Image (cartoon, rainbow, N blue to C red; front, side, top):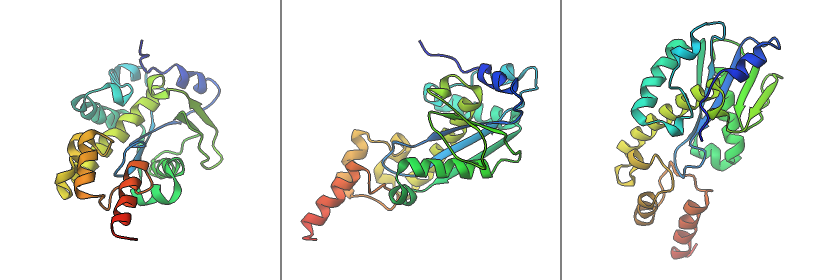
Length: 217
């Protein structure tokens, strides 16, 4: 049974004196191509109808694309502050996916119009301006702040992958968003990796190495 995101954790932390809680989540961590994108959201916890205003906000993976896009607007209209950060496929290759995800999160936090006093993150720890950090396992299914951040990140990344689909139409980015589907794997084998592929990810690296062997490198 899936848990519906709520404000229980936020109100527990608010009772401890924290006012501006920044919910954080990412999209694209497991993809073979494109950036990893992070969302940061600070909700107005003193708003009495907050849960009603964000009715339907939950883990982005459980929502349709159309629902996510509608909720994206509701979140940006309701939140005190929203930040978005990217880490490119080149940065992912250079740093590794976990450090690159943290970099995207820091960039998202830097975009916030309000200064948070606590970070609320889905299954990750983050060092940012010496702020306390609360990590929640499956946080995007528990915390409304994290769920909202997951939608911000997912919609933003999907829009980015749609633009990449215009540049590289033969790869099907509009369909699979850079994830490891059969369609994507077949396109990689036929056309080879692009400039937006993550060369250190095993399926892509295998094709790169295979191409080098065939070229005698």
